[in-house]
Image (tube, rainbow over all chains, first blue to last red; front, side, top):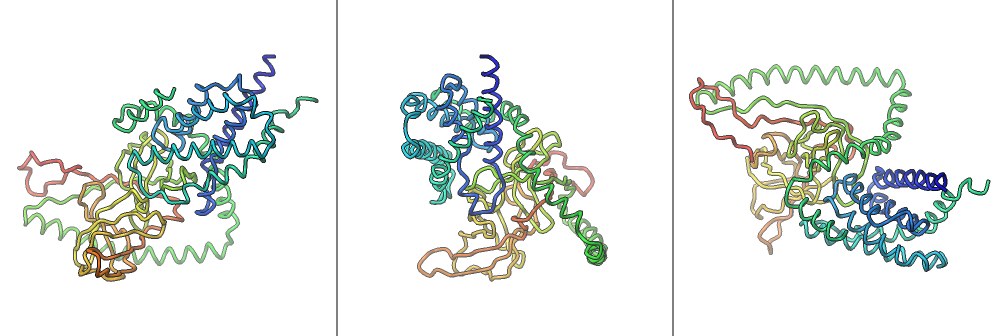
Length: 162
Length: 274
């Protein structure tokens, strides 16, 4: 069982590092504003897949790391990831049995919640100049979800039956 | 957990007490940033390797010509500088000099889409500090907003939250240039409709505010639209620095203590930082 657990955490860290790299990928202007919150999507997946392994504190720490990575105020992503992780943990039994379209709607609301929180916190800080492009990652992230789900599922179960 | 986050947010917003933990975490993060910018660098290096011999020769020739022109300009500049120092000495004025520079390379990472913040590979280990101004070969690029041990974050002058005090090089008219959120444009929202400014005017840093050293080119005015029904005109300028294609940047330490040119009499000169 321990070997199995190690396997999980290795894969978890690897996918997180990939997601963080994707988050800060240098892109051209238009594609840049479409770049979804990869780390959050991957976190939602892992929370659904192994809810007993990924707790709220784990998500919060991850958020702090993302805050440092993207140069935000410390605790912003921590707060968001902890909240979303909590809701996912609450609903994970139901979420697992949802068909993909229904899951996608749930993910849409998660992403929307995260972006609304970012919007509030940035506004409290007095950062201006957020236009409608700010909301695009919610839509692109939602559209990406089925692929992320399939890809990570394949990655998680890789080599399991062989 | 939510409470901890909110407290953390408040503390980080108000004070700099969390800087240590941030710099510790940033060391963990640095490999990821390097990893991301690696492909771009590799692509550039391979491109450099396959540049043909004739191209190199052409470039070399061009650079040599440019260097000749520059060195001739420098000859004159030195004489002018001496004269300037002498004249200021006559006026019993102090002359600011001694600007030290450090070349930093850009890491090709993009933090958040709605901000113009870049990451460079020199950090507080090299003495980089906040509010330091950053230049490229053509003009002002921005300022350091956060220095971490191995890297630092630079806000560009086009960021919507950035403002830079400038003056028109032709007549010394002072104003403030504010970033527009677009890479190729600055706004000058605080000039009246009858201001003496025309398209083509060069804007240089005025040195007010103490963050940027005086006299570096910032932007060229490219449109002036008077708005008769409003108190201020609508003016756009294009930054001189090539913000979208930078690779190397200069970090400048402007010595904020003026060098007294007359005999060392007045010891108690006010430090005019901030």
